[in-house]
Length: 85
Image 1 (cartoon, one colour):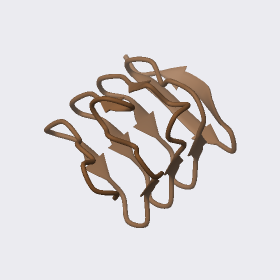
Image 2: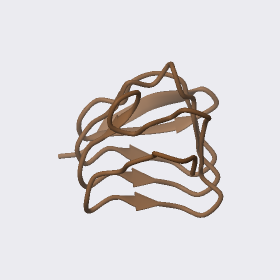
Image 3: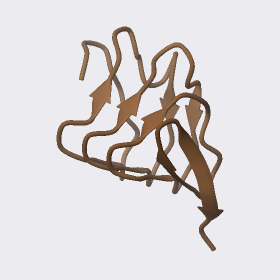
């Protein structure tokens, strides 16, 4: 994680997950509470502005755009697979 990165409380970030340079999670990319970011995921800084509450990002995903609240996303590029109840 780069300097000045910030993640809200109750979030899980898996091993080898990468936040790009200048990805200030709060100004450039906001990660809301209770987000799960799977192992080896990549969050593209400058493109991803928001990851919503209770979102789940599958392992190895490359996130290139905002992730809505309660969305389950995976893939390269990450796509919405479903929404959690």
